[in-house]
Image (tube, rainbow, N blue to C red; front, top):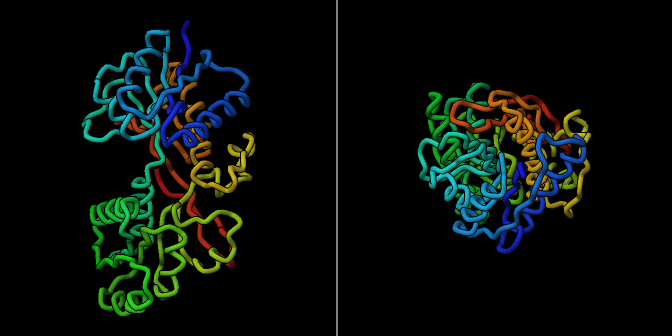
Length: 323
């Protein structure tokens, strides 16, 4: 029977909670819309690449006319590497080492590198030409840092210097002298909220930019005070709860877990995109809860995002950047 297959690691592995959030957002959006171009069917698999590929083939054999998923980068890479994409497939991550994606293979992701590139564009557009970056030792921080620097230099800016955050007060106290010596005119924090709040007091009056990782959530007023002035991007789902495209969907709490909130929002937009693709529309824009979504020629959805700033212990949306 023709249907839309939703293929997620729901059966086992470390990503079950993440997959459940995506599924819940997808089904919530379907309930709000009330109809679907095709019936929906959920396929539960593990996060093993071979199992996902087998599940993908099973869905096609069972009549899937469109597939949403998988979710993790490893499994998305495994599907893309087969080059056998017989129906439109909306992957919820970006594959690695695949090169040009197969035809009918589309990508919607919350990749942190895309946020870092947007912030590089914003910093450059606002006049920054020499950027000082502060990064952690973890892989996520390095990915943010590398993406920002690459984009900023591509635009014509210079990477003035970099500090690796170690957490000790002695190194923090050296930041002002290092920034001054670098002649930087802005700072990028490739850090989360906890580390960002420790670093912020040592950055002086320069403009400071960050990604959504700096956002501690709506109820962390103390942290927000300590991050005063920092600009960052985030999805409408978290920053603009009164937005018309956001208000129509039910909002689970997830105990304040922002990562699960983001994945729920990803599921909402994945459903809406699936309806467009299933109806045969391959060129469209979507005012989504994860951002202003635009489909580019490389089959990847780019997200335009609201820009927010920490002000007086809260967050104020001050603009928009991208896609």
